[in-house]
Length: 404
Image (tube, rainbow, N blue to C red):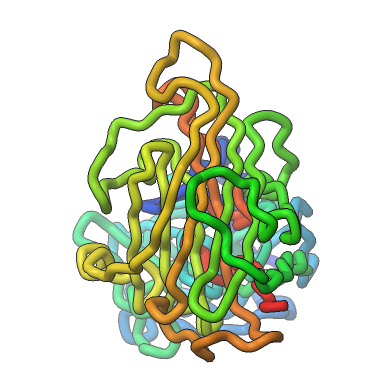
């Protein structure tokens, strides 16, 4: 039975978004405008929920009771309905607005938020009727993100977020733990890397016998893995006792670059990249890049996106060479592309299980290319393993590298 009060309805589309990350931005659209119907009752008794919760604010004056997620384990792209239940038990702090964030459950990276939409529809604290259960209903479309999504919410004003009472009930930043949305996961791709009988000559020309024996893979769109029809990138890898060797073959009608010094931010221009998480711990990993001018960038991280200046102090000892098929830095003609070879010392990488590696060893890795059309005016990303977020450091989406 329902009594007079509020049911707050929000209709929106949830899109993955990029915050501070490297990689191309998804093409985002604004969620549909949210309008709160008038005269819709609250609920006298909370119906059954499939995500019970006990978070509270202001010493229990406001309580989060739980959520109903339908369907419980949504598919990517599927439309779902969420019903959240709150109850005001006593005098509430005034002028706090409700906020809602969606994050990657494994890394905490922001995927989207409905702050403004909720402010337009959910009455601020101080106006909720005491002793009544408020039902907030959302209808949204799941993003194409491949992984578990955690919903986080709470209350905020210009002075900051309203503290959550219990430490275990929030994420450490006063965002209460809401439903965990888990759909089926796309399998991670595998690359079986052959051992080189003779190491390739690092000259930028991909004509060595080692490359002929290595499987060739074509990178797909970094966000969702879609096939690339133009400006394709092909990658091969081989190994021996001392090095992993990587070959990139990049189609490119305008090969260019303005940066010339090691560890310059070449990731802001055209670049080919490889990341290794040798022990697969999802924490310690290495990033190595090369530009068409054969400028190198290397970094060693002890946690996802740990301090960059410290990470850049690491020296990989990588050797590289580039060969350009066209005229470098001349946009008056049409180029064919560029190729690069990297020789990466294994012993220099983070947390390598075995030096030298053993046949059957498995690392986590990803290979990327960033292409800046018309000199930075449009950015396109490619990846061996698609990320579903605009972040090349999305470690849970790294593929597997098998030492054959």
